[in-house]
Every structure is written in structure tokens, then in C-alpha cells.
Amino acid sequence: MSKANLTRINDFTIKIATVNGTGSASANTLLMKSIFRSGIPVVGKNYFPSNIQGLPTWYEIRVTRDGYVARSGSVDIMVAMNAETYARDVREVAPGGYLVYDSTWPRPALLKREDISVLGVPLARLCNENFNGVRTRILMKNICYAGVLVALLDLDLAHIRALLAETYAKKPQLVESNMKAIQLGYDYARANFECPLPLHLAKMDHTAGHIMIDGNTAAALGCLFAGATVAAWYPITPSTSLMDAFKMFADRMRVDPQSGRRNFAFIQAEDELAAVGMAIGAMWNGARAFTATSGPGISLMNEFLGLAYYAEVPVVIFDIQRVGPSTGMPTRTQQGDLLLAAYASHGDTRHVCLYPANPEECFYLAVQAFDLAERLQTPVLVLSDLDIGMNDWMCRDLKWDDSYRPDRGKMLGKEEVLKLEKFYRFLDRDGDGIGYRTLPGVDPKAAYFTRGSGHTQYGAYTEDAAEYQIVLDRLLKKWATAKRLVPRALIDATAGSRIGLVSLGSCDGAIREALDVLKQRGVALDYMRVRAFPFSEDVEKFLAAHELLFVVEQNRDAQLRQLLTLETAVDKAKLRSLLHYSGLPISSHFIVEGVLAELQPGERAASRDAAHG
Image 1 (tube, rainbow, N blue to C red):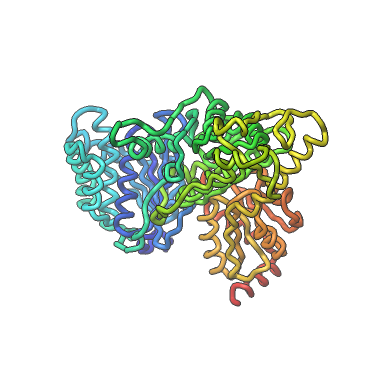
Image 2: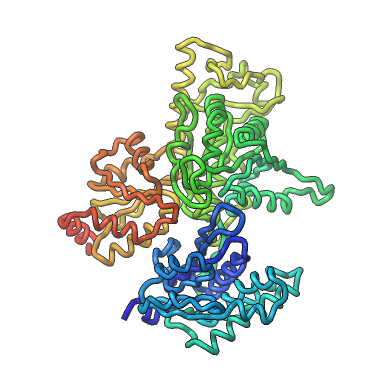
């Protein structure tokens, strides 16, 4: 008997194949959130085209009682709503799995696989008989399949109705029409199939203290709580929703209740270079400002990133990474900007980078990014990706400390300036590589030119070799200070293994699941997730402590591995890359198979000994 035919509760993956622009997103979100409200851990992955409508789109809902957040890599229930992709969709179903399709038009070819169960539901006919208007019937057909799944999976209809009431609170007529479509699918499935399927849901209490949120929304909220008041941007997938979310939050929380005046600036620039220039100018003037973009935008921003680095002006940039190079695949995910972000601009530049692993960290690291930018007086780039930024994740409730105050770093007010005999903007008084700064207009005594050209430590223009090198060497000292200030790596060395696994960002969910699977197979590994560049001292220690290190990342050219070999003392021969760059989120299966394929029998035995203590 296949795995899928066995009774499995709260442990399976549903994939829904539809056409972009037909309203399926509402049905998919409704299903996922209803499962979440049943107390069952769940995660959604959206694979959508980069055009507006008409092309195939897929949505995966992974029900996972163990709380895993990665893509499963398999499909147990396929809802095939797009005739153009039937052949592909049928092939993806795991042996023993289920295929649900619209049987208004019979598809004999779907029955060729004898190792899956095909459930035909006349969705179009049901909607044509019960709704008027072509557009309405198309939309309701996608809601109708949700009703079929509610019956097949034994999902509580009360959760569906409650979510519809919340979604359409101002349009009660839509609640009733959507509920009618759901009931049509539900009743048909109950009357014609054995419900529930062997794969079904059962209420749990594992979602208490958690929310469903995407990374872009969480990052925007973090910017707001960090005190950001200026957002400059140019639209680019997949970062646009971060700016949309910030605008939404600012409209609610940055408006004076008495006058109605907006206490923020939200600017759409003519391109990405102008956007980051506006953000740099705003932070130079004392506001907390940021921009959000993706890889092509970072490419355009290089000139101003070099200026901000050398003139020592803080700014925060969110890079929601997508597939490259060039335009690439705008709606697929990757970690291909690691080197670009770390060394953006010509000349000797190094930029502080933060690597969140999920929406929860997007919120907290957004706040840290602003504090670090101002303390270090330099650009800080937060490298998320499309998987984190645009997919819904189950995260712990976001917490906030109301005693938080922005860390403005070494910023002098007028009284402090007047006490100084002389003010020199780029002089290192404390030995940490960071000079003291002022805001424009504080006092004539603190006036200086903010130069992207050669300047001395006193702020004057120079082309003198020695004076130039003093400033450049001080910036390197500042880089050493940054190593002590950035978030430390998260390390799990409980396995006590001589073999380690190193990664960053959205690989984390798949890796944690893979570690559990490997342990069950007798292979124990230590794990380090890098959260920032420059690499802190704990990264060096972990690398030195292990004889063999797997580096897992989502790009072709092993960019994290390159950074490690460039910026640490690690022996290059110890590093083995596991590279995933298809544009789909990484799965635990890829990591498990990659590790097992690389390990020799003797290495497996040593790891097995570690697993068993």
C-alpha cells in the first residue's frame, strides 16, 4: 500500500493548479487560514507568473502537524483547474494520491494513472446552474473547489464562514454568494465520495501564539516600529508589497489625529537609483528612511551605495531577492544577490548585510537594520527573498518593547558641538573607526562637505595619497567594529558532530526538517545559520571546529561559500556545496539526498556514532 493511501492526519500537501487572474488566490487563502484556525500548522507557497493574468499558476498548501515550514517536494492531493497543465499536474501526484478536476468536460486521459484516485466534480456545471454572469461563474468555480476540499478533508465549515464574514465585512452579499459556492462543492463531495479521505484534518492546538504573515508585511511593520518616516521606491517584483504595506500602516499610524496631517513621506521615484538617493538624502537630514527593491534595483543603486559608504551616510535597503541574472524570472525565488550586496559599488566597499530566515525575523531585523545603519553610519542591506517576502508563513506572535528608543549612534546636538574646540566629521576619536556626525543646520561650527570625492579625516577635499589612505583604513577599522555589532549566527551544536552544515536565510526551514530526517537515518550534523555579514567571531569558531562543512544555499555559484572563503580563515577543502537554484523554494528532500550522496561510508558511521551519543 502506498504512503498516500494510508490514513494520514494533518500531514500532507495539497497543490492547486489554476489560471492567473481567475480569483483562485482568495479560495486558496481561505483554505489555508481555515486550517490554521483549526489549530493545525500550515504553510502556503504561491508559484505565479510575472504577467497580470492568463498564464498557469499553482498554490501549495502544506499541512504539517510537526510545524515544518519548507516546501514538501511532493503532492498528495492535486486540484487540477487548468486544462493546459493537466498532463504536468497529473504527473506530480504521488502514488496513491488524489486528483480533483472539473468533470463538466470529461478527460479520459486523466484516468490513465492507475496508482492515483481521480475525483471528478462538475464544478462549471454547478456554478452555471446557480450563478449568473460569465465573470461571476468563473470566480465562483474557484470558490466551489474549496468547498469540495472542505468536505474531503473534514474541515470545519464554521471557520470558512467566519473568515468570509471578516473578509467581506462591508459587503455581506459577497459572504452569502461565496458561501453558496462552497456549499455546492461541499454537498457534491459528500454525496459522491467517501468523506473524509484517508488524508484528512483533525483539530489541534498547535497554532496558539502564532500568526500567519508574509515577510514583506512583517518587514514593513518593523520599519514603522523602528521609526521610519520616509520611504522612497520604484516598483519591482517582489518588493512592491513591502512598500504597499508600509503605506497602509503609515496611513493608519503616522497621521496626526488632530490635524489629519500625514507625518511621513512616501515617494515613488523615477527609478531605483533615484529612490535610494532620496532615502540617503532623508537619512542625512535626520529622518529614518529606506527603500525596497530586488536584484536589478540593487544593480542600479551601486553608484549611490558607494557614495553612502564613503561619505558615511546611513541608509536601509531591503533586497527581496528573485531569480537572475538580468530580468530573470521575477516571480521565482533565489539567493543570488549575496556577492552583489556585500561588495556593491566600485572600489573597496563592504556593506553590512542582514539575512532573515522568515517573516518573524524580517520584523525584528528591520529594526536592527536602522540602529546598525545609524551606529555605523553606513548602508545596511536586508536580504530577504520572494519565498519569505510574498508567501504566508506561520510565525510566533510579534512582540514589541515599548521602552525601545532608536539608537542614533554618534550624533551630536548643538550643545555638544559648542563644547568642542573643533568639529571634524571624519576623525576617529574613540578608536572604533566611527566618527561623530551632526545633522544639517545644527550650528555653523559643525558645517562640512559631505563628499563622495577624496577627503581627509578633517572633511577637506584631498588627492593626497597619505590622507586618502588614513580615511580608507579607518573605514576598515569600522568594519571590524561592525563584526561585534551585527546579529550573531544561530548555532546548534548539540549533535557534537565533526560534520557541520552552514546556511542562511530561507533555507532554514528545509534544513531543520532535513536534520530531523537525517537523525532518524543515523546521521547527526551540527548546524550554523549565518544571520549577518560581516561574519562575527562565532562563525570563525564553528568553521574551525568541524572537519567537513556542507554549505547550503539557493544560487548556482556558491556565493555564501565564496564569501566564507574570502572573509574567514576556513580551509576551502573542508567546504562542500549543496546548491539549489531552480527558482522554487528549497525542500528538505534536496538537502537529505545531497548530504547522503556526499558522505562516504566511514563518514556516515562517524556521524551515526554522534547521533547515538
